[in-house]
Length: 110
Length: 114
Image (tube, rainbow over all chains, first blue to last red; front, side, top):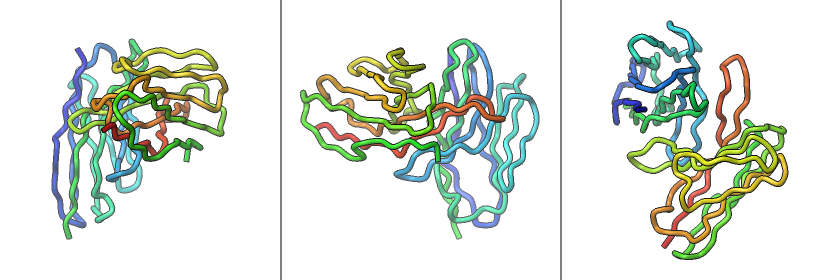
């Protein structure tokens, strides 16, 4: 079967670091994506991992372990504008389709 | 900005009426998608297209049809709207970059069926 799990909600303080985890089970794997979605807006692409390891892009980093079916998104130096939902998605290599998790709603407090 | 516009952005309709949502793209992308997003569910694929007049079903296609007569336009039709189709609908395109085949979304269409 196909399943993607991520926490429903998280809170953090401005200036801090937060890690959002994502675990997945799919019949085939061909990449993991993270999207950011502010309330009432469309998801926007953040990062892509297909090989194991850490991909860094400014304040955001994404990590992948294919053997563990695990990824995390790391947000550093949190800002109020980082309050949003973060969606984990896996591309199934058998269907070439993206399977989305239900998203993690992050609230950043002053 | 992936050059995607959706219309209408907001619509309220009555149960049993047909509804068509339009997705327009300006960058000649071959692949286009329609997703719906509901609380407690991830984004779910309704239908997709891999070229003019080439479409296929996604995981939640019942009650929906699509058409693509031109590269730039992908239409989603609810034949007879039901309250369960109240949702946010996102059109998307895929573009192959260094980040692989990445999906980019339009602004969304909020549909309420009363």
